Image (cartoon, rainbow, N blue to C red; front, side, top):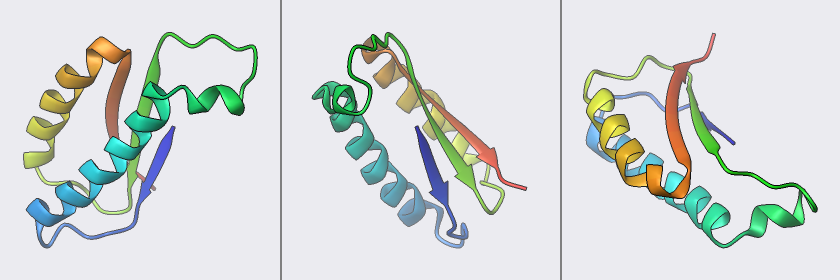
Length: 85
């Protein structure tokens, strides 16, 4: 699953809150099993939510990724950030 992030990092706290809301929506999609509608008959045991950033994320994002990944691990979900380009 991909999140395409076109926002700059002028306000990292607000930016991370917006991303967290989007990531939570993706988690809801996974936890509810809605993804099965798009891949009937497929069995998934692991999911990756990859955030593709237009602008380089600040160092504070590393801590966010570690905490979020630890919280999502029991659901078979990991989180990755990459800078596009």
